[in-house]
Picture 1 (cartoon, rainbow, N blue to C red):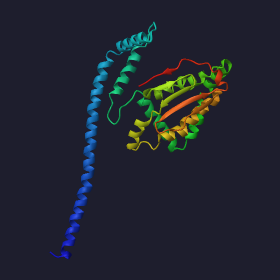
Picture 2 (cartoon, rainbow, N blue to C red):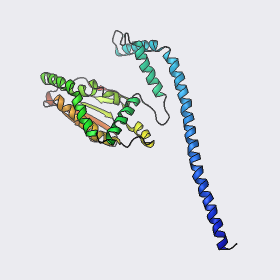
Picture 3 (cartoon, rainbow, N blue to C red):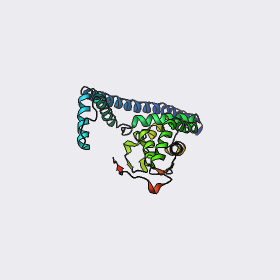
Amino acid sequence: MNARNSLPILIGLLLVNSLYTAHAAPDAEQARMIAIMQQMDTASAKLVALENALLTNQSEIGAAVGVLLAEEAGVSGDLVAGREAEFGRAIINTVRTFQMTWSYEHRANDALVKRDLEWLEYLKRKGLLADAVRHESEIKTPLFVKRGEWIKQTGNYALALDSITDVSCFRDMVVASGFTKTSTALTYKSPYTEVLAAGTKRGMFTLTEQEIHEQFTIPTLKGYGKILGVEVDVTPWQADRMITISIVAPDAEDLPLQSSLQTTE
């Protein structure tokens, strides 16, 4: 067979091979996705069974854990009196979340982190992050103005950090990573990495943790400080994702100190 006759055959073989590859790749990807979905369905069924088993005793679980916590803290009285079922459900929700280990190990704050990221992603796409920062200050003003007056009267600037990180439920977003806290500073690890990575891989997010820190977290916390009448210092973004919020009081040397608190994972 001469070269002129063999060329059409060669071209034909290449076309057939390319068409086969084009069809085979989607089929392989579809099979992979089906396998993943089947694994998730199996895991979900186990979660439902576990949750249903626990929910039949949610009041008892809540009461028992409440008693245990009181004993561990060395306090008397019922910590969850009248709300045993609600507390039990919260515990069961946490247990269920800890069983979700596909894609990444879900944490107790997983749902809150997802909601936070979805909202921040929306704000970024609409160009509204700066507006959201201003809104955060505006909506906290009625609460923080009164606290700022109390801080000024008492000279207890430690209340400023509590106002930002306790009353505003900020710690709900960082509790999974643990934190260290003194009267004037709170250090924690940015909580977004796992959820952000999984969502970005699926095309959900274009945000980065550094963007969140620089464009939302820092200006929001500094805005809170202005309302409270204190300077809030926030560390720049770091590779280890550790963030420290510090209260810089006018009379920091006279700042009333409270016991240093620390939690670890």
